[in-house]
Length: 242
Image (cartoon, rainbow, N blue to C red):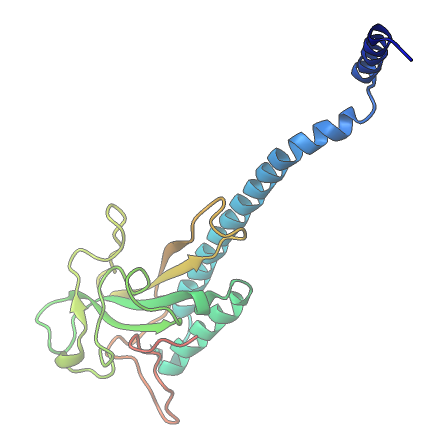
């Protein structure tokens, strides 16, 4: 029967062998570092996706503002902007943003910012004459941040549908946009709810907000937004559809 000394010596030899055995070290180190690697990788993917989403929403706003300045029906050198034109450019933005569900998780507002002397004015007045919208969300954070007009605003050439005056222009503080005298600007605002890839692990859901504006490119009539026969259903901002 081995003595206690022999047993202790044998155990010491085993412990010495275990201590000097390098097998499995890499696997153990990888197991310890894997959560950190995954966390850093997931954080990078999330931030990249957020940055890409910002870029997309910004480009959608720019494209829509640009398109809205170019469309209309020209007659005798004067272009009439119609409800069909508003619907077409909004539909184009919706198709562009299909990949991020732009009009399901976000809302688009087009404002016609004009500096015009209408028949009922005594001098040029800067105003939001009419607005058209597309997008399912509603409430704070989604509606226009710069003023809203009635659904009937701009539907005819009367003072009762003149919209709202904005003498200083519209936009964020320090970056106000004003329309030139006797002309107009198509001002686009998009408010989109970003849905993180990993829930709230790295970033919280947030509203991405972008604006864009372009000068009207043609000799547009600013009397009203027209709706000739066959008439179109106006995309007024009291509606919330995707």
